[in-house]
Length: 350
Image (tube, rainbow, N blue to C red):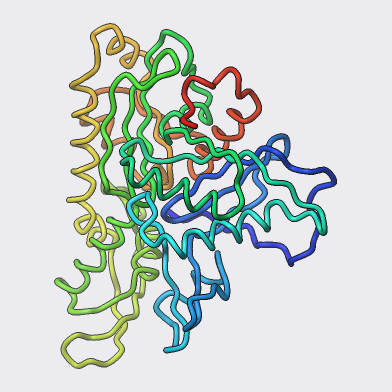
């Protein structure tokens, strides 16, 4: 699912009256959210950049996202993050710098802040180094990282530092992280490179195969948001979808039902369910009893998919809860960590 973007303010607009020293960033595949200690979310934009022929960024965020699939030869719009990690280093570096400059805009006064970035739990050392190098190139002097499931659990208000098991399923744009957490650490986890983007791709392939209609990722995302569901429910809607007919080569409009979207996304959702099962198979008995009582907390944009909580309940037998503000729960967790760095020092990676 996609967050409603917070427009980037015009350059030179002062958003704060004091220097900023601690910044949190949820650098997601679909959206980037930046928080400032004591002030909450100051930026929420799609992780998209538009570049000219020279490779210089012309626009970022929502403005650039509107260009996806519509650019002329002298422009290109792309997403530098794939599967939760940096896929295009040079573009990601410029994007991080641009977002940080907007969030930290102080007129003539700027400080180099300590930045805490949430990263997938499955990130490799090479991918971690790419995040670090991009942030340092953007002017960050001290960089900390935290696993997204831990940040999500803290943002959802779970007792991560207690001797009680808490389970988080964070379904983002590029990855799904499943973690059982206790005593400020991840006891067991599973992470797969399947997320909202995979659902969009499945819809594109289904429309091509079933309807002989070629659609773009933005259209597929709109179909997922409007029609996407895991289980059949009353009041299901239909949607007019426009694309290019693969037989005639001409533009065509067709009507798509919710059942067609449900069939299209079944396979990637089975991967998510299997990841949850694998994580539960590793749970120690004592923590297993905690999960029976407290259940699973769903976070990330995928938590907004209709019926996903019911599906996981049917498959696991555990109670499933959707976190408040699932799209921003990781960012809220990062902000809480910044407010008490000493308390959460053991879960951070410098």
